[in-house]
Amino acid sequence: MAVDDDAEDLDAVITAVLAGSRLLISVAARSLAAVEDKITLPQFRMLVLLAGHGGVNLVTMAELLDVNSSTAMRMADRLGGAGLIVREVNPDNRRESMMRLTKEGHRIVDEVMARRRKQIGEIVSRLSATQRQALISAMNAFNEAGGESAASLPQWPGV
Image: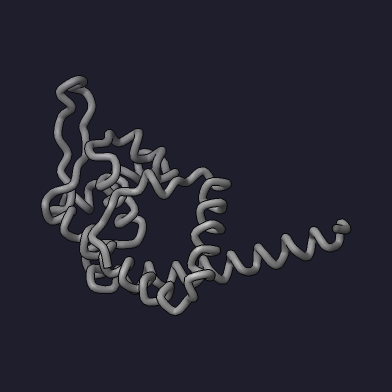
């Protein structure tokens, strides 16, 4: 394969991934529609991280979200005010507070993720069995190359 062919192939892959990401962002936005009066997409990211990590301190949360600590603190304040997270003193380090989801926070994450799974399931069901297998392989390779593992995701209610 010539260098030009490699560049064309890479460009075609990038274009396909960008189109797929646009579709997935649309699915994510639609899945949040029922709760968008309560939380924003970045705040939902914080809830999902708490669902997957359990109790997390502010510094760790800021790192996971790739934001500064003051931004994570403002998000936590809003989510705490909405009754979706609680902050408690870390019994191992009394100078540190830990965040965790409330029952309502868990309910919202489960509800949104169930809607998201349903919408993705509807899209994927339009693929042939061969296309679904190819998609599994391609997405697993893509996720691995990006440092993400499907095995590390919490399991939400099925479709």
